[in-house]
Image (cartoon, rainbow, N blue to C red):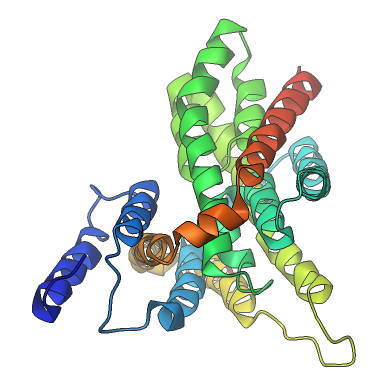
Length: 308
């Protein structure tokens, strides 16, 4: 697609502006970016590859201001144990599935972390730690967002159909649905108690971004003789959570910072989607989608029967 540079600037500035409006959600931004890339419309007046990583990391840090640590710490012991087991097991099973289906290692790790912890936020946090390429990030996000959207509508239906209790559904939704937004949506659709349980357990689950990122920083260190490169944005993420906890009088400001992080993530996803190419699609293949679907079905089914 060939247009003048001025028109190109107008289009991209307009798209960036739309990213800060509710009408443009994260999945839609990702798919718009992919569509524009496949049509050959890419920015020429700035280097998206140079700013995407910084934008992702900065957005993760800002989103930390929106996490309520006091609520997370009040989660029941059973909820924490179930979350811990599900996170570790999901990642191990996901990596094994990726190996069996011959999925690219980093793509498999991103899908596994997104499924195990908290969807797009986990992928955004882990991707710079393992030095994932934009194409790998794009496909991991596509898989997670697609399944996440299905779960938002499917889970409340199944919960009512099987007459699940409010508490059981809350735990199930928090463990088996990827993104926090869809967990909240599904919990709200099922009932007030389910919403409270689901939100609390999901917040606890989201904190696993921190230890998982640190572990992966060790695993993906190429030269063991070289000093480990600590993902400092994770430390800033922790600091943001702590600041929000110890300075409740600034809560209104923290709401705005968290919102800015969420919208910054939308901008980053637009750029990530735009970085994808037909070559990337052929390279990743069908295996990543099959892996993501199988892993999600396994987690959903196993957690359902365990909670029942």
